[in-house]
Amino acid sequence: MSLLQMIAAELRKATTLPAVWAGVAVALLGSIGITVLNAVTTRNAIAAGRAEELLADTSPFETAYAAVPLGTVGAVIIGVMAMSSEYTANSPDAGGGRQISATLAATPRRITLLLTKAITIVLLVVATALVTIPACVAIAMAIIGDAGQEAVATDEAVLRSLGAMLYWVLTGLLAFAITVLTRNGIIPLIILIVNSSLVSISLLLTNITPLAHWLPDMAGRRLFGGVHTVDGGLEALPGALVMAAWTLALLAAASGVFSRRDA
Amino acid sequence: MRLSRVVATELIKVRGLPAVVATVFATIGVAIALAAGIAATSSSSASRSDPVEMTLATVPFLQIGIILIAILVVASEHAGSQIRTTLTAIPQRTLLLAGKAIAYLVTAVLTAAVSLCAGFATAAITLAARDASPAGDVNAWPVVGAGLYLVLIGLLALALAVLLRSLVPPLVTMLALVLIASPLLAGSTEHARWLPDRAGSLLYQPDADAVLTTAGGVLVQFAWIAATSIIAAAAFTSRDA
Image (cartoon, rainbow over all chains, first blue to last red; front, side, top):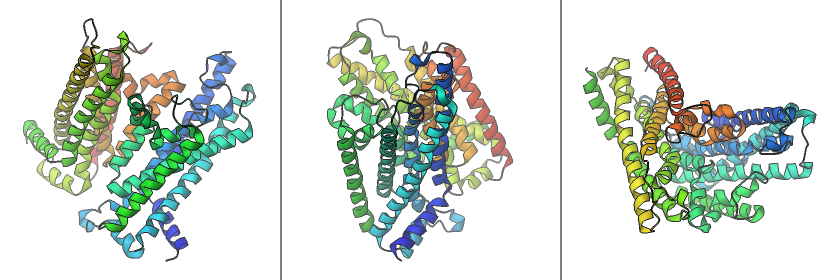
């Protein structure tokens, strides 16, 4: 099969998984929900003349952008499910088979298969981000209206949105690479959802050793420019490079293992 | 069958699941490692060198283990055709659910108690080794509250897993609720206090909320568990296996 056909096949498989749509829904509807809450709070605070009490300022973009970290969870779900679904055993009544056998029979070139899966995940996450982030900003603008002061210039807003999107994509690929290694979705789901949260294990590790700032999720943290993050650690650009290097290393390890072991 | 025998069956099943056994030991291990890490790196100021505070700081992580245990106990039935064998042996479905819940409670109480005690002991020993033990009396009641909270949040996960009959959806829902949605919502609206984990956390952070008391928080968490359990039980008794 040509590469394009393989990508089309993987895209079709991924978009028929309800769990992938659940991931998209978490990113899209979850972020929109938080944005609506934040925007209503901001609007009420401005109306009551208490704008200085707000955590963010009255900018609609900042209000929407505060919801963006939630999309990381959606990216994790998409990245994990695209691979773990291959290893889920069918009902014993239907033979108890796993989809990976059929997949490898149809596309025996394993490295190419992983490549197409990675491309599929990138496409899905980018599409989700391209809908979610502008939708959140539009909703925040509609709710806050002229009352707020837009403090963020358009080019800066675009840059920060792209940074958040890059973080989502890299996290999705990390989730995918770990799932290839574990052949099971539970461990990567738990590790990556915990680390996208406020009780992140990487965050705790930074208290013990500054080396933890070089872990992928801590390194990439400044891609969410403007959102309050921990002090110290890498700047946005070197951080993004470190996170990308982790992603590539894990993908390489996953390719090595996947091409050698039995399905 | 009598309830005691159903509970015995379910406990044997729980003991036979490698994933549950691994989760129990992993939870205890995480409790010890986190307590040691927090106690070893705490600054020496008086207010922060309390082993109780350090044990409580591990609760957000320990709840992941308890939630996973609760979901595995239910989801393993639906992974293959085991649910049919189970229902053939125990056709009274509410009795089966009660047995499962009690088997979970036994496992969760043991796991939570051992984890918290081990974490507390680790923190106290680490502090003593650093000559940083607190001077005054230590009030250990919040640790008991934390244990109760852990068991209750797992009970909510159990009910959700019965309703959804699967592993990953309830797991993601619970993790997203307690780790992501709840802190995000707490930052933007005061009504986040009515969420099950926020309300329940008053058990180990007694004066953290302006509106709810500890008893009120427990009642709110019970209401969430009761509502989910009633829906789950109604679904489980009425639908095909």
